[in-house]
Image (cartoon, rainbow, N blue to C red; front, top):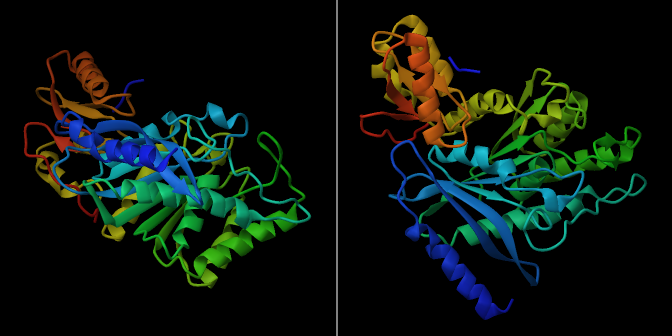
Length: 383
């Protein structure tokens, strides 16, 4: 339960980036490390620095890579922040990934201008927009591949909204190897103003569908599509057309259409409560495809000695977003906090809540996905 440049300069910067994680403090069991950085990349014939946040666990092995990217900001792209992606990066890192959250060109502190031309209603050019944003993502993966602690043989790409469509464009590139792709509320809509979709632009939607058919010809890795029924930008009918087009040319797409979410299902990725719906679907997808996620088997001994009510509380806790911690009362009772800014906050709040409810001193049992005072369990496929 829970309570309420020059080439020389580029080389120097890249050398700093490659070595930065070696200077970081080691993460303890249950915690992760954050590495904010400026990642030097080359896109076309120009050099840029993209704003990135890398999050990973204790650096004792090579990590698979989870690339995270955002949607479009309907206002000022420079007002975008890596905090949009920080919580997701922590969720992925706690599942065994080296999570790389990136601000594409023109967003936040990243160099360059937003590539925002996608044609007009009369002459749509969705492909131009999505390919430009996929350029940023491919360049980010090339930069991250220089690290000594990454396993470039296992790469997951996750994107929201326009970022969801951009990772689908990335997946179609023969120059990029992706193990799996997660498209959350993905697409590209012609807007008349901030959050004001043009409902009369059928040609634009048709061009979006056509591009998804194009992606399906060469994107043959597993993909997971997560949408809500009340998405104001990408309605179930349009999503169905996109999926039919994608699978009709050879793509693989598992579509999960979630029930209506808040006032607008397009906010699933960021709004409070969204990750609680999305993460269980993500875990099922990762496990089904042999990719890292939390290991349910490691909690079997703990669950076996708990009451039915406490067992159910632990099982609910495991599906919650990180940063989180669960405390047990001296006799019974499992009390947890989730979605905190740091593990320390989750620990202290879980213990305080447990003490408040049991009127006794409590002990931490789980921190994120690590059992306390027991050997840390490696991430595994979820079955």
